[in-house]
Amino acid sequence: MIAYTLVGTNDLAKSTAFYDALLAEIGGKQAVAVDRVTLYAGAGGTPFFGIAQPANGQPASVGNGSMVSLGASNPDEVDRLHAKALELGATDEGTPGPRTNQTLSFYAGYFRDPDGNKLNFFCMG
Image (cartoon, rainbow, N blue to C red; front, side, top):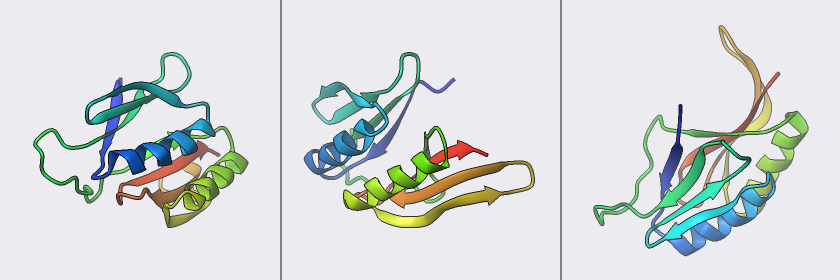
């Protein structure tokens, strides 16, 4: 159902370097880079993930309550990818670990990219 997601950036070069290194850890690579947008592709048929400078020319800002979840294969991969994000300059928004709510049991580690966008690495279980 989802074709792609975008997060905003105010420094496309810095953000591209961050995501080039981070997404390479899970087989992601640049698929399209034009003007103010870079899209990353994973395995065939999965949605694109992208970074973009806003089209309206205004500064990018973080959406309160907005988050992008990136899939991981297992808890060990969540741990490794969360640590890699922090190594690349992200800030911790929730140490990797099991989470349970009323209907789901999952494992996730939360972080904010260098622009302040909130993301996590996630797996079921």
